[in-house]
Image 1 (tube, helix red, strand yellow):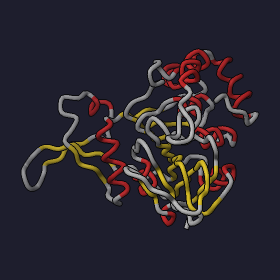
Image 2 (cartoon, one colour; image 1 turned 180 degrees about the horizontal axis):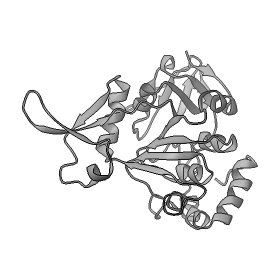
Image 3 (cartoon, helix red, strand yellow; image 1 turned 180 degrees about the vertical axis):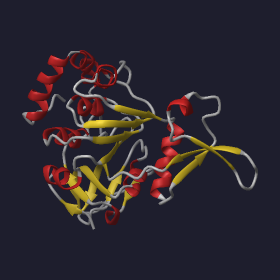
Image 4 (cartoon, helix red, strand yellow; image 1 turned 45 degrees about the horizontal axis):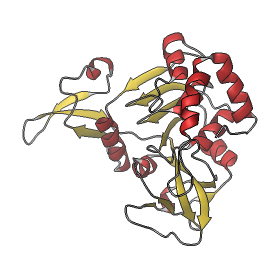
Length: 272
């Protein structure tokens, strides 16, 4: 059964320097509150994994938390580049960061393989792609049954996965509703997992297309109302499109970014 911990205690216990950390959530349910706590605790040398790194990883990279990023697309959705990520890759500020790029299909399969306890994922993909030239984790194998040439990538097995969700019950079972990405697979693949939720309820009232992550696979449940802002949580609050637009100017300038961190993360405030 999951432990019910405060957000600072969850991050302190399970996110250690040098850890491999996956933070998932697609379009909504992005675990911003947890990412900000990682920044506040000044975690370092993290390998960050995310299918679509957006603002939260831009913030964590700019704050100096990451040494490596494994991803399949990176950007400010609907706006443009991640300027803190670009600054780290192109100019080494605040320090150099290694990047390892995959396709969406490869990462989704790698999470699923990790959740199943398998060492690798096999897929039809990367035919005609240049990614195998720059990513040595992409290999090709021959199917022993058909002779078909297939791509293979290592499974994703994070030290800790962090996701946000709508609700947890008093036993630590978690309800995820709305658009569902690879949150379930990320939790199942990880050695430890932290789930931040909007609220604790007596009973999970599950609707269509709902996903329940059982408490016995979760390390810690943390109540964090608004924990996905400025992204949205289906059924609770909308996305702050203004913040995503404003972030472009904030992230372009190192001094503006550092001032934003001081005011809205280290001071435990929140721009959203």
